Structure formats: C-alpha cells, structure tokens
Amino acid sequence: MRNRSTPILLGILAAAASILHAQQNSEQVSAERARANFARPIVLGPDDVRVIPDAPKDYNAQRTDIPHGRVEPFEYYSGVTGTRRKANVYLPAGYTAERKYPVLYLLHGIGGDENEWLNAVGSKPILDNLSCSQMDAPSRMTASPRATSLRPKTPRASPDLTMTFWSF
Image (cartoon, rainbow, N blue to C red; front, side, top):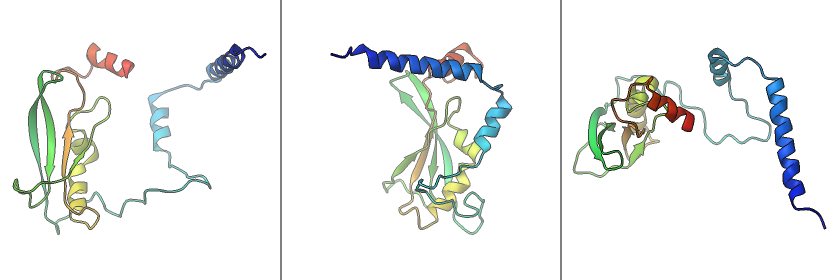
C-alpha cells in the first residue's frame, strides 16, 4: 500500500525547488520595470478567444454634440465603519428622480478613493458617450464610492494604510 503523504511531500519539494530557482534567477525589480511590464500590449495566443471588442475610436473624447450628464458628490452613513462615507454619482443627461435607473458601481483600486475614476481615468466623457450610444439602453446611474474601510482622514503614507497593503 502506498504512503498517502508521498504525493504531498513531492508537491512541497517541487514548490520549494521552484521558489529556490526563482530566487537564484531573480532580475532586479524596480518601479520602472513594473510600469513597463503593465504597458506591454496584450497578445492573444492562437487558441485564445477575444470576448470584448476594442473600444470605439474616441470613446473617451469630450463631445459637444451630445447631452451631458453630471457628477454629484454624495455622502452616506456606514454602519460598518461608523463614519460618513463619500461617493460620486454620475447622473445621465435628462435624469429625473421620478424614474428608477440601473446602477453601475465603479470601484477604485487599492490606494484609490471616490475620485479615482473621475481624475485618473477621466470617466465622465466615457459615461456621457456611453449613455448617448445604442450600447447603453436604458441610461444608468454610476456610483464611485470610497471602497476602503479606513477612516476618511487617514493620510496616504500612514502606517494604517501601509499595513492594509501588506495584509491585502
């Protein structure tokens, strides 16, 4: 009868050998190298299937020939954090409180806040263009909340935030 721990032990040894190999052959890691890696074009393999088509040309251009929605800052009380939380809500052109709208929640990445999509990505022209296209029927509200559970006034370089990155 075979010992049941043999496959587990072999797996652990293979993982340890892989880690040792990676440590011995590691290249210098730098912020520039990481940025260059993320900037590489994505090349699909021969057996990959493209699911999402390329964005239309000028999908993010500020257009003057369409109606524009508006971004409203919004605050609410969170029972989870025990604080008032901030969010930005995009209301499509022609918004009325009498109508119900679907909602798209755009969450920021680690270290971001409720302004990430507006400032870093420039989401307002994209949302304006989308709400006036045939692809977005019916128009929707878009909410970008502060999705971290840190206290709102936590400085970006604080130990609280640094430990959040490490524990994430």
